[in-house]
Image (tube, rainbow, N blue to C red; front, side, top):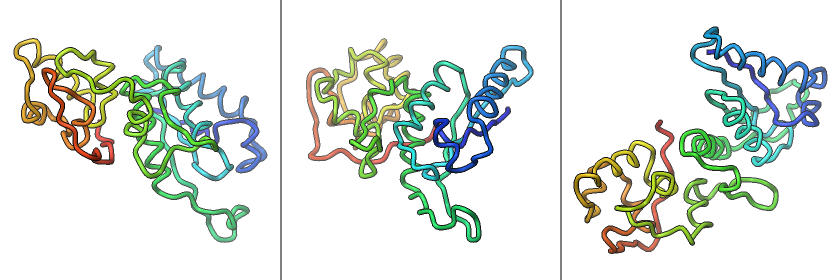
Length: 224
């Protein structure tokens, strides 16, 4: 595997962190060249990149817009994020550090784009282009798309199941496999398949029955 770090998501931001670098020529072009080596078998484990978050005043939307393009159009294996932390006696020592929670939200959003099949416009941003910090991006997306829910577990398509908080790709496949042989009628059955009931129950029906709780549990898992 090869990693070529872009650090920032747009050419106009490069001057904030490294004025001597040409974004298109010295960063994006080598990344394109590296991706071209994947098919030739020269980089069998794929290509990754990383952004330094918060150093250049970029928004989460800017980072994730390029992340989505890198994953879906260029075929990068992963995108990583490193929250900026100032170091004494360096040119940016007066800049504010990036909260760890912002970095975590970006990782969660990247997972939705990479492994759950989310489109960029399914993510929720505020007016400044930032992900909400008070809830994970999958829960925020579900709350913003109330017209999709609740879904009937026994008939929902895979992409629909993946929009449900508490259901990941492995759980979605388990649900689809199981309902080919038996109808799912209880929360206990879903829990046995790995579904996070405390997160999912507000967004599902089982054979037409609805089992909501007042507020779904927070925090999507990053395990994949």
